[in-house]
Amino acid sequence: MGLRLVVPERTSVPLVARLDYSAGDPYAIRVAFHTGEDEPVEWIFARELLTVGIVRPVGEGDVRVWPSKDDSGERSVSIALSSPFGQAEFDTQVSPLAEFLHRTYEIVPAGQETTYVDLDEEIERHLA
Image (cartoon, rainbow, N blue to C red; front, side, top):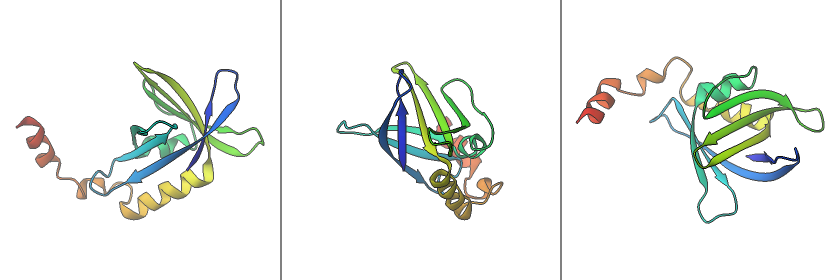
């Protein structure tokens, strides 16, 4: 998916990100930002956070997502990330993100996530 990294002068730098989703972790979307370094920078987002962020501002702390418009007036989504290593803001068009999210909901429908995860087993695994 194509993104734009928003830099302090409010200009943007094109960037590519790979989005991955698996029924094995139905609440999460993994995003690998390809920054030109050998290894991509990876973040894990709640699927619901990206879904809600298309229509209204959501998130606090390390990850915030909100609807916006790009320079041409097209609907876009802004994503702000913060970590001890720095901060970044990205913009992407709504269409490719919405299409990706739609495919994830075909794999695991909303509200059906618990049927794909054994929460008791996960808790036991983390306590062991």
